Image (cartoon, rainbow, N blue to C red; front, side, top):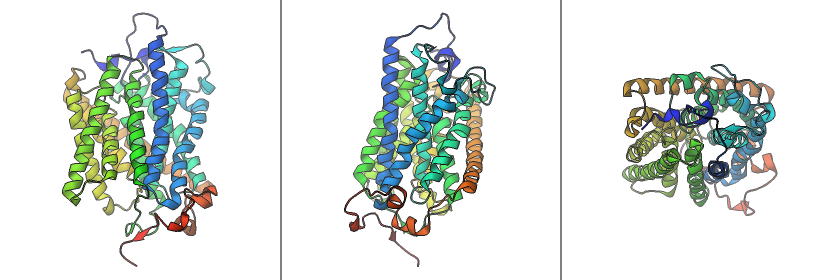
Length: 435
């Protein structure tokens, strides 16, 4: 099999590399139809994430939790038009970012990216940028001001995410030239969001009562629904990253089926050993972790190898969740443990297992390249997020007042309640120890 870094049109890396072109590209209606569908599938992931996160929150904060995801569709969608896409993918850039020549999608009308209209490519990439910001919110729910999150998320999308996407997925980017493999966003999205979420949780401080206060999921069916929508949309996320209806997309689709299945079983097994019972939240968490782990590797490893990616990703994230109580940072919904840790494991296993499809550099060389890619993502997003949060803190308070945090943020932030029967007290914090 030829090296998969030679499959993508017009030297734009989404899913791993650039195509050596032998003739001028022409529009392919089949590829275009598939990419429209794939883009819609990825868009559905953000509402799916809202249900997943919302079910894990308290009753009094379910709307605010879900709105932190939903608002990203509007916020990042507009910013992607105004500058995000151009910073990441405009032609003529340097090793660290492109210019603003595609501001407002200028120059994309009538153009092709490989065999699909450039508008479709830009739309597909917009969906990635949207959910990357939404993922961060899980670390800061129930205590961060909605306006502060919106301001931070907008700045993060333009100044952190877009340059990182350029580094990894644009032929001018320095990590692209180095040879980092990231088919659909393990480095660019999941490590970035996981690390940024951990930093945000540290800067904000812990929720009142943490870790002695248990904030239990208020709606487990929401969690299962959200996980199912995420898995459904993730098929477009990973398989769509081939930018064509081809064999590469087929491999990515298959591994995106197998790895989460293996991860779910692994998580349930570990949970049963530790607590004696498998849980629905554990099943949902395990499959999401498997999706995260396979994302960078999905078209670089064989279906059999994807079992190992899912299982190891789940084991590492499960261990990280157990370690959470020892950490000072209150990452509310384990964004770092589930996305950061699984993203790191997936990125490293991409280098270790890429040989299973007959592609890639020698094992040791590719592993070193993957380590550099992981380290660059961690340092860039961690330091950048810390600086942005401090800047936002100079403009407005990052946290809600204590009274609003205890009562729940829905009414104070949105003048709405998730449920009419709010007197039930479902989802209120349960004190399990201490004063």
